[in-house]
Amino acid sequence: MAADIAIFVSKRLQRPACALMCLMMAQMLVTLSDCHPEHVPMAARAPISAN
Image 1 (cartoon, rainbow, N blue to C red):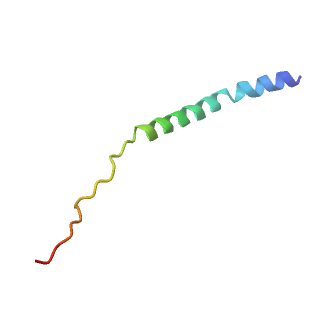
Image 2 (cartoon, rainbow, N blue to C red; image 1 turned 90 degrees about the horizontal axis):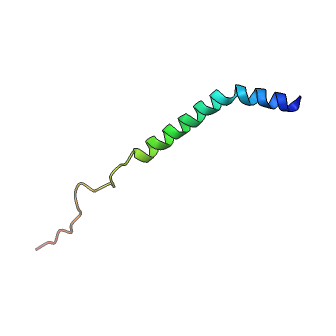
Image 3 (cartoon, rainbow, N blue to C red; image 1 turned 45 degrees about the vertical axis):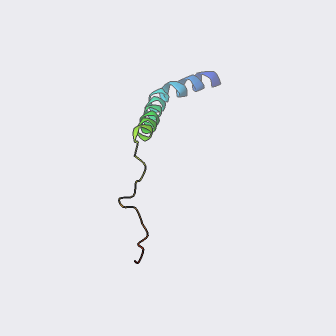
């Protein structure tokens, strides 16, 4: 009886579990593919000498 209930529950949860796994995989792929270049300063600081 317990095995039948476990199989029934697992069959009911297959689609939601698959959807959750697909969403997690999509989020991981988007995170990995979102390559930002390193922040490069727009202007360099240079000391100004008083001559």
